[in-house]
Image (cartoon, rainbow, N blue to C red):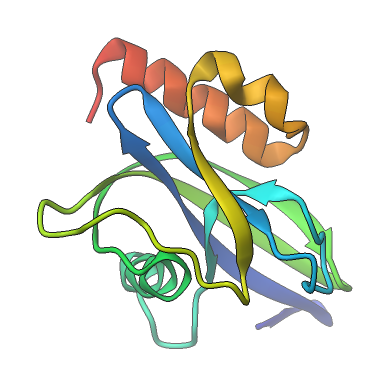
Amino acid sequence: MSVDGHNTNIVVVALLRRGNTLFIAKRADTKQTWPGRYELIGGHVDPGESLEDALHREVREEIGVEINVGQIVGAFTYESEDTFKVEICYLCDLAESSSEPVLNAEDHSEAAWISKEELSVFGKEDEETGMLEKAFALIEEGES
């Protein structure tokens, strides 16, 4: 998509919850953009695709599980590779029929279910960190 001559992408990500923990994954060292950085699971919305359909597809591609998509936790914008991006973050749960996540080695090298207290251990200091903090607050409040 192009807005005022700038490339624009919509990105959807899952704040994937298990109990009081959230799932993050470390980008593969072979990735051109932000190798070795911890991130949420998700990706770009394809033309003609709904936000939720894109999120289901991206989660299946990256970690091989089905999810139940919950509420939007928040959104933010950033620039990457000369593209303006809008990232929308959803609180999600594993579908009952899903097994544990299995990483696609092309995308991620390792992953963890982290608690609110462990967030700082992973050196994650970016816009997604604020979304993780909001999700942990919702979990503490008992939101679904």
